[in-house]
Image 1 (cartoon, rainbow, N blue to C red):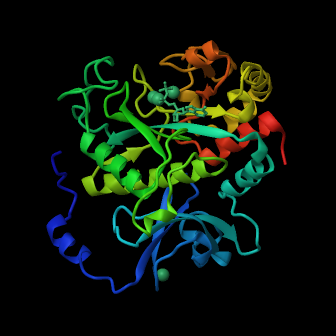
Image 2 (image 1 turned 135 degrees about the horizontal axis):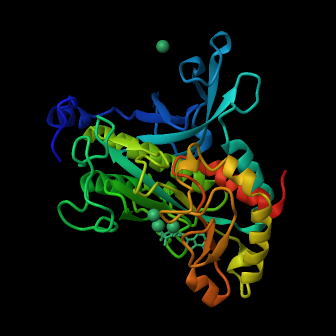
Length: 378
Ligand code: ADP
Ligand code: MN
Ligand code: MN
Ligand code: MN
Ligand code: MN
């Protein structure tokens, strides 16, 4: 990829310093979600490697600088909830995902994880599994999709989905770097594909049933790949978003999670959410799926309210979406709110795909409201 003239970096020089001995101390990158669905982070030095999340100290940040607190009471607390091997600094260094808490002891306004975690715990016996398909668009520093003619458009959609070859895919280097970095970090990423709109890609973070592996180093033993349950899928998705922004930063490319980055005959970007429970996966699970459809239909408006900003531009009933004003579902139907995969209908059990969430939606809010609708609130 051509280097952008605005990117000032010197990888060769940097590597000289990154290989210096860090004298047993650990760099912990504390990461949190800000007021507009972005990630922020800052680094803390720890005196030794960490084996469990309770060993990680609480920290704080200036919430008035992120729109998360007023200036006269600006401290917001960072409570570590999950940690991952750091693919950037490597070694014993870690990425630490945090919840945000206000000084009065209540969850910060933008801490959607807290309620989701409670809902998941209350309904743990249902054994929810979620598989999230994160779509996103790569933009140049000028804000136009990477590789598109400046101020112009590439040829119409068709050759780009799962495309191979020059002119059909863009930024494969960033995508590959992100995929590998996620695997290194122990993110449960189940696959990737190039999307219908050029410079748009997708990866899936999901339950990965059947995949069960352990790392062999003593440090990495703390991060077995396992089926993601409850609130973990949201944790992994947020961490994968952080990693994506961070990788793209090194290439001088911007990541957009906007649901309809380019108006007109170009596909939008979603966060299809695949859902199953012990009942839908059991023999005759289709009955449980049908029951879920009834409940989801009754709360369509409530779901749309938390399924992402600007989603009305995307959910038009065209470009493989359902109409925002009307709930619908069907077998193999990519033009509805919810799709029941053909194989699921054939087996009479399995999962369904909620196609409504936008790419910029919060996974805690999505999975939380699905559990609430199917099982009842707290
Ligand atoms: P699509 O055909 O919609 O593009 P993908 O293969 O991109 O489908 O994504 C399907 C997602 O569904 C994956 O993340 C996968 O792990 C997930 N999935 C598969 N089986 C289940 C299940 N039983 N419950 C929940 N999610 C599942
Ligand atoms: Mn300061
Ligand atoms: Mn997909
Ligand atoms: Mn897709
Ligand atoms: Mn899908």
